[in-house]
Length: 152
Image 1 (tube, rainbow, N blue to C red):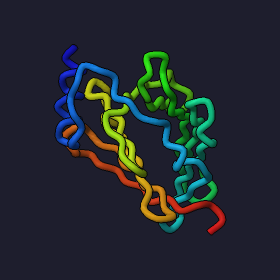
Image 2 (cartoon, one colour):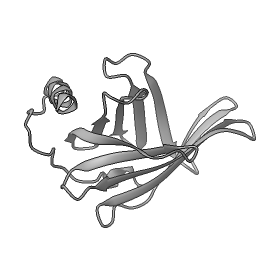
Image 3 (tube, rainbow, N blue to C red):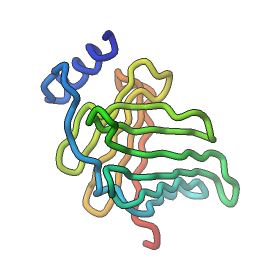
């Protein structure tokens, strides 16, 4: 119950009404595609399938030059209770669930204040770019990515 209260307070700060109900929404089909960010020799990639059957399957990997330094399997799905959630399984670990706390046109936010890090995950479109951000609930320890479609 404490987590639901914290999520409700977080949702209110985003202009989303806090309720005991499941936050309704749709899976973000606008994330589908193959995305890359390059910063010198460093790179990060994300891949998202089309949103079919209320499910997007994803994968992410990062590295430097030819060396892989990190990878993760992800999914965004509608759960049996009707809620939308982001599931992350870094390096094959058991998946962590982040419930959706806010959604608007071209933007979606997930949060789990009980998780160590990240606690908040945000994706949004900025024209042809896909942007991503992870942080603690208070906005600290923020990491951001600006992805462009692969092949550009």
